Length: 414
Image 1 (cartoon, rainbow, N blue to C red):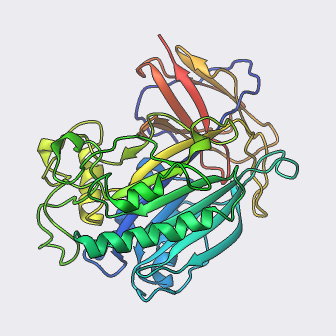
Image 2 (cartoon, rainbow, N blue to C red):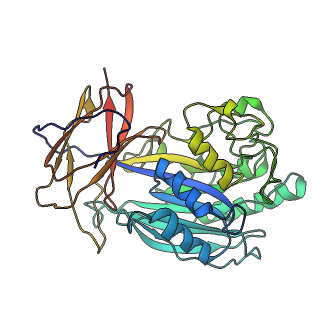
Image 3 (spheres, one colour):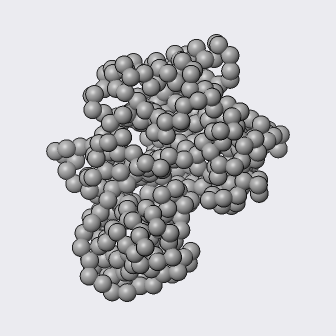
């Protein structure tokens, strides 16, 4: 069964192994999930996932463990048992309705440890993930994931509280291995790069240096020069929803920052150009994200879902590793079920499927910005050749529906 997004054909060809491990991350302030209006937000979230399919999904404003289970079972695992969630921890900082959590792709990661860092406002949640690689016993790749929701609103008192929260994180850096791969993500509620919390976060004298992947310092609030990275608010008015903020898209509140080593270390490296305010076409200043005036790369359907889902946009960022990622879950063990022959292509992307693997495999091709361009199913063929001649030149990613399967990167040239 094929769903046609771009034309393609199948032919038989000879292949050899060439895999690239890619990890897709997303952080999202879900806005009082699940109680806030409208009532169908688990479905809206599923639709948003269908456009990006993160491997690590980090959330803010989660109200309850029941809400977390709703995300896992209805939004993420609608097509099978592909995701796992970390343990839900009740608040230790006095804000029980605004919690953080991560969900991660089953088989791609193992949760090694989790902890709560209490702060004067809200918890910072810390998770240690081990990437499932062929040499994980001898040279493991650990990712330290911190998720936060800093104090909101302007004013010196709130700036001080944001600073104190970040200091809890930077103090924790002193106890980690200096070569750790670290992600610090969430709703930072920052208005300008000169704010003490942002300066503390990126202080080069910290035990582990953190960097902002896009390096766009400035006064982000109500500044049209930063309209392409604004993430809040998706709505001019919050009136129809009874929750969240209005005012249109004019703040960069949501962030993913990372340890400096992820700029260059091939074991785990940021893929330049993949950090995006997801759904923001760069032309929606002080407007509703779903306005027809904001058309562009991100579709109207996606922007409608984002408008209804939350007053924030997700932030996405892709990482790559030079390690071979392998599936390692107890439910469905498979290795090298898919082999990609040519990672630099002009017309045909050639695949081979393991003859011992009897299940049909679904494939999807994504752009570097996470937009799904093509999808199809293997239909029990050992050899597949996909016509990608109509794709523009650039970097693309091939994903399968196998839990924990690596993502394959290829480059389309003319």
